[in-house]
Each structure stands twice: as structure tokens, then as C-alpha cells.
Length: 172
Length: 187
Image (cartoon, rainbow over all chains, first blue to last red; front, side):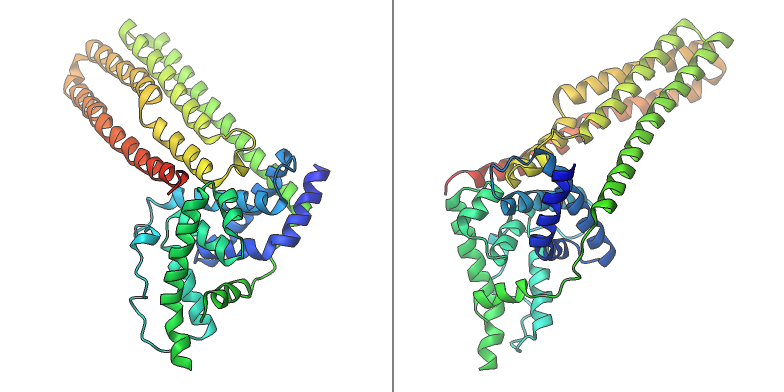
């Protein structure tokens, strides 16, 4: 239990902020988001019982966190009114893009909204991409083949450029 | 905004600095374990109450057919409770599987609840027991035959409807599993 505590402290210190961003992208409601975050932290602590150092702490923590979040989506998808979509079904340009420059908060809200409509596995890819994880790391965490990860990242970049690039152009 | 800027925007968004102290985690884990134990005890208590109820009824005057039906129903309900409980638990180390494996395990568990051995064993243990009990009850109390007939028809409708409904649920989960498998294959 002591080693679990030590590993947890290290993980929470290094990845706490990323875990908060992850939970925020899965749950809009503040209380539900906090509950999900607590579930993630508890799952990480429990998981360290089986941590043998076969992968990096980062990979381990992200796997556990994303798995808790993915299970959360699977459990709640029946109650959800809006069906989750694939990256291939998303328009490159936002349907409510007015052409005006977006401020920081608006951009973030729009980004979260975009992420929340995706299926769990694709949500995971974009979140890991936004957290700066490279393609090999994403493949290791998600289990998606490197070729598929590359395809998905290409698609994500195209969508992000289409949705968030226009405001910047208008600012100039 | 370039893609790098979007990533930077994402990474620099404000967070609350959420942390759980190890004491808090230990307390929460203990509460969860206590709840789990409580639920298990509650399940056993419900089974015990049912058994006592049927034994009491048997002593007062239950026919042999009713008794067989009651015993089968108790076994069926206990089995259903065990299945639901077993369905909740994961193997140790599952938390840190890669997400595709994790989702596949999760979906396969849900799928298997609705098809194959797990579904049919549940049906075979629950439905015949109910029929035998109601038939025995109708024989012992012909004065309420109309109500019993309604109960038997309801049970039959439930049993017949459960088959396509569960098959549909299993197919739905299988489709999601297939979609995940495609992601593991090289494009």
C-alpha cells in the first residue's frame, strides 16, 4: 500500500492537470466531472497494485484514466440523447462558425464541445494528441495500430485547422 | 490559430488543481469495500428471506408442484444475482489494458450477458420454475384460475420477448466490438 501511495503521489503531481482536462472533456456538468475525476484517481491508486514498470508511468496513468472515462461513456451512452460520431462523420468546418475571431474561452468551449461528440476511442486519440503525446505513444496507450493512429491524427489536424483556423485568419 | 496553438490552448486551460490525499483515498476505498460487502450481504438476505418464506408456505400447505416451482425459482433468482455480481468484477490488471482491449472486454462482457450460455442458463432456470409454480398454484387454488392464467400468459410473453430483445442487444455490442477490431488492423 505504501508503494501505491508513493506512485499515486507521483502520478497526481505529474499528470493531475491533464487528468482534470480529460475529465472536463467527458463531463460538462461540474459535479459529474468531479465524480468522474475522483473515480479516475481512485482507479489509478488501485491499479498501482499491479504496476510492474513494464511501461512508463505516463502510459500507465493515461491508460487507466482513459479506460475509466471510456467505461463512463459506455455506461451512459444509452441515456445520452445525442449519438456519438466518428471523426470521419465530422465536418471540417464548424456548422456555427460565424467567421468572427474567437476569444480564448470560446475556442476552448468549442473544442470541448467538438471532443464530447466523438466516440470514446477517437476522443482518446484527440485528447492524447492535444496533450502532446506522439503517434507511437498514442498507439501504445490506445492499442490502435500506428497506421490508424497516423490516419486519425491527420484527420484531427484537418478538422482543427478548419474549425479553429478561420478565426485566426480574420484577426489578421 | 495553428494546430500547435490549439494544443497549447488546451494544455494551458485553467484547472482547479484537484488532488486526493492518500488518507482520503484509503477512506474512499474502505467505504467502497464496505458498500460492496453490504450489497453482498443484502443479496444473501433476500435469498434467505425468500427461502424462509417458501419453507413457511410449504409447511402451511404448498402442493408438491408449487414446491418444485418455488425451489426452481429460488435457484434461478440466486443464479441471476450471482451472474449480475460476477458481471461487475474485472480481472486484476484490467484497468491498465490498452483502451481497445479494455473497451472490447467491457463490451464482450455486456454482449455475453445477452447471449449464449449465460442468457440461456438464466432463461432455463427462471422461466420453467415460474411456470411450474403457477400451474401448481392454479391446481391448488382453482378459484383464482383467471388471475393465474393472466400470470402465466404474462410470463410466456416475457419469455418470448426476451429472446429477440437480448439477441438484438448482443448484436449491438458485437457491432461495436467489430468496429474496435478494425482499428487494430493496419490501414
